Structure formats: structure tokens, C-alpha cells
Length: 432
Image (tube, rainbow, N blue to C red):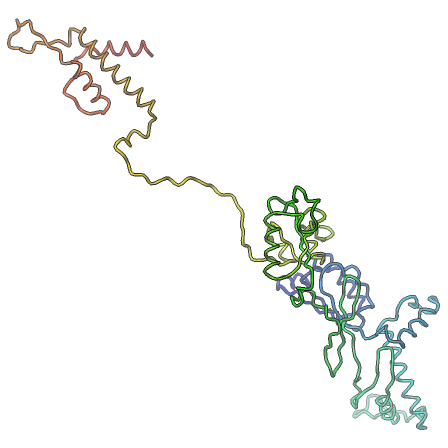
């Protein structure tokens, strides 16, 4: 049943049964953890104080009901004293208060006694036996003295254990009142009464503790937890009192909220130092959530994570600050490319090494070309007897050959086969 109610998000339950069944239901409510703040149970019988509700009174749930027997009335108090003075062995149940069902039975006997006393005074012989009739007769044949007894019952007006007893012309009880009760941490408390004329009358003004009216006259208990940088003890906290002993983001936030709403508050560090979790076996909450559920605090100001289980028992404000894992990187500065921007991929040292290698290779190529006989040629092929020879690998051409090789561009200068190639190759191999 409670699972279906939880699916439909129903948190107001009316229990129309006797107190023995109410106790079993409340035990089940505690087992499944539905006895916390946010749930409202109305016990629809007339004996709110007859059952044992001590287990649920500290859970935080709102439990209310009705009580037809007012133990503060002198008549009831006197009867209760006489009842408790009886021997329990001879009168079972005499060691406890009278239950409302027993009080109704007592009043019923008193009404019958008063009615027959009236008939006796009127000299009506209600003990005379009538003629035997058929019980299955159709139409039914009324008992001749029954009308007189009914009339006498309707005329009865007495004070019983359940209050004023009188009936209207239809035999319905009228002009009576029922106390409206509510379960507090101290036990059942009368908060008002109901009757047919005035309906619901509230006599205790603090039955709505969550009402914002009059908050300026109340000190709000704020539970929190020591967690830097939200709530921290000051270095010289022993020199301060109350809220001045703490500092941090949540402390400043609570102060600003109190200033904006015009209320007084008191910071209290949670005793067990926990945020709040429900025990799997006992279904009891601990930490800050437990203090809210069981009414030890009015509000919690802390870095509290919103979870589905916690949302079932307490209300969260709209999230205004979220924390998570993020990757940060520097945004590149927009700069205009310069003339030498092509040098940026490599460091200046690398460019220096490349330049030195270029100069060294060009110089070596120039020197080797001077020693190699294959690099010299006759500029006038038509005159084979000419003694004039030339070399293409001048110092300038050697540098130009290196530039062409680096830039991978075509060049008009070529090394003849088997000229300087083996020499350069052997030199590189030797150096490496």
C-alpha cells in the first residue's frame, strides 16, 4: 500500500481503524522510513491517546487525530481515579486509562439507565411481555413498548465520559464536541476542538511551526558542517561567541539571508560531522539531514549534494552553484604575422645550427671541388689543346648549390659522377 502511495507522491494518509491496527501500521511506516518530515497521518478514530505513538513522535512526521474523552474534565478525572484504584486481576485494564470504546460503552449503559428511570417514573410497564409474533412477518410487527423506549432514549440528556449526551428527533447525537490532537515531541497535545456549530476551532496558535508569520520573534536554528572554505573556525574563535566564531562562504551567505529576511539565526555545527545518510537497517537519518528530518534544526546551509533519497525527506533550494571537473586552456592572443614568422616553429639555436651546417657544407664542397680533377673542364671544347680550364664550383656557386639542395629546387649546377660524391659521403660517415 505504501509503495503505491509513494509512486503517486501521496504523503497525506488517513488511517480509519482502531489503535491496535494503528500501532502495526506505524511500525511498518517506521520500517520503510515514511515517518519523517513531509508526511501527514490522520488517525480517524476517537481515541488518539489510547495507542502508543512514542516510536513515531520523534520522526518528524505530522500525526494528528481526534479524542472524544477529555481527561482534564472533572467527571472523567474522578472516574479515572476510581478506575485505577480497582484490582487489575478482577478488572482487567484497570492499571491504565480507560479507552474511548469503554467510555462509549459506559455512556451507553448510562443512557439506557436514565431512559428506563424515566419510564419508571411515568409508570409505564415496559416489563410486560407482548404477544408472540413472527420475526419474519411482512410487514414487521413493532413491539408495543418499543415506541415508548425509543421516545425515552431520545429525551435523555446527561453528562458522560464522552461529554454532553443528547439526541435529536431522529436519534442522532447532537451538541457534543471532539478534541483535535497533534503529536509533538513531548507527546499528544490538544490543539483545538470540533463541533457541529463552530466546526474546527483552533485553541493552540503554534500548531503551524513552519508558518513564516512571526519569524522575526523566532531564532532560526541553522545546521552546518565544518568544511573549508564554506564554514571554518576563526583562528581566535575562543575570543568570540555564537555566530562570530565562524567564517567562510556559507557563514556570509547565512548572514546576508538573515539580513534580507529580517530574522535571527544561530549556527550549529552538526554533532556527528556528517552530511546525512539513512541507515539501511534502522532507516534512521544522521548528519545534517537527520537534524532537519527530526526537527532539531530549521534549515541547513552547507555544500550539500542533492540526491533522490534526500529529496524524499527534505526540500532543497534551487541550485545556484555547481562544481565539477573542467579543463582550462589559454586563449591564443591574436597577433599579426611578421616578416620572420616562418622562424617560429624552430628555436633560434636550431636555426643557428642549420646555418652553420649550411656554411660548412658549402665550404667543404668548394674545397673538394678544387682538389678533384673531374671538376675542371675546358671552356673551349673546339680547342682541345687549350691550357685554360675552369671550375663551376666557385665559392658563390657552392653556396647557391647548398641553397638549392635545402629548398629542394632545381639548379643548373650538377656534380659529375665519381667526383666529389664519394669524398663528401666518406667525410659524413667519418664524422658521424
